[in-house]
Length: 188
Image (cartoon, rainbow, N blue to C red):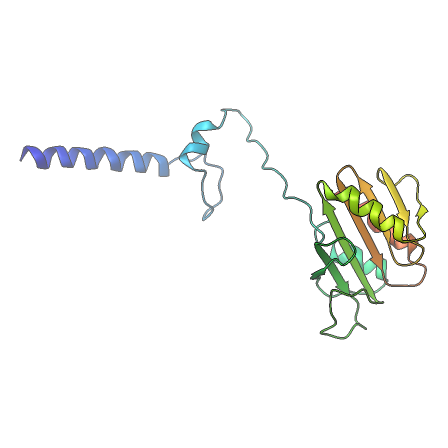
């Protein structure tokens, strides 16, 4: 009987601890969202305001929106697809206009499209400089830390350790590319 009483008491204490954790009304998580681990909760500094979660890292598809790509191209674009960034390595985000046939490879630049590549980290400056040596680079002032137009296909911008290259597949593309690059810089 003594063993049953100790087991019952232990179960009651465990249940009370679980219920106390579940009954917390100030958890800050949405219904169905996972809550912080006990270790994270224990290490969190108490404050009157919740700390903002870190912003997700920028990517080739997050620095230019579908709406912005449509504006640059001058017509609606389809949802972006991912391709290989042949100049920089990594990932290209490609928005196709209505005249690009379905099944077109996102690894190859084509007219009637917007192609965005973001390189971050130690290799960003290397890729920026490497591409500049392969084209007739025309410097652009007032855009990022350094920027250039490659003479016909794209604009390249370096900001700190991030390099974005944007190609808008239309004639006279420099203006739309500069607009997209300025918007992209705010998200990098």
